[in-house]
Length: 225
Image (cartoon, rainbow, N blue to C red; front, side):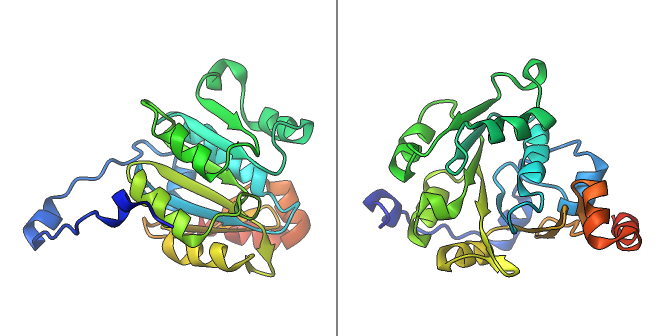
């Protein structure tokens, strides 16, 4: 249930001129391969990533994190793998200590919803928060809404299990409809639906993608991108 402070927030009503004059903090100088898939991201975007195990979700996530650290610190709430060897190996493929040290923080399953709220209220708390996974965290849709209300200037990235081609569970499905970026990962290709533009397939690992989709299809994805 949302806190009283969140519930009492009054609606803000503005005119068309004010609406057109609004400024948004964007992630400037995005690499072209990311811009083609995700458009011009803002500093407070929300994203859900889902796909079957072994299809490239973690690799895509770390590629994204390696880009995001140029704009702010990242808190990775790693609920499934924690700080196990498997998580370390994936991180080593995409991050390096010299470049990324001090910019990425890892939290394990003890970082529950209430602990996360307390942590994010700290001064200079991370800008980008990764929840891996929604199913392990066990939050409700109301709690998701509370996070967005309490921390409107931060970005949230939710990783979800998949059921078929969709996120698994009612909460994950509701979050998918609400977030600005929806990313289905299949066969080492990320297929984004993004409100900021782009919306072209993103190749996570080309050799792996070819083994699943075939070279002809992957070449089509590359041309589309």
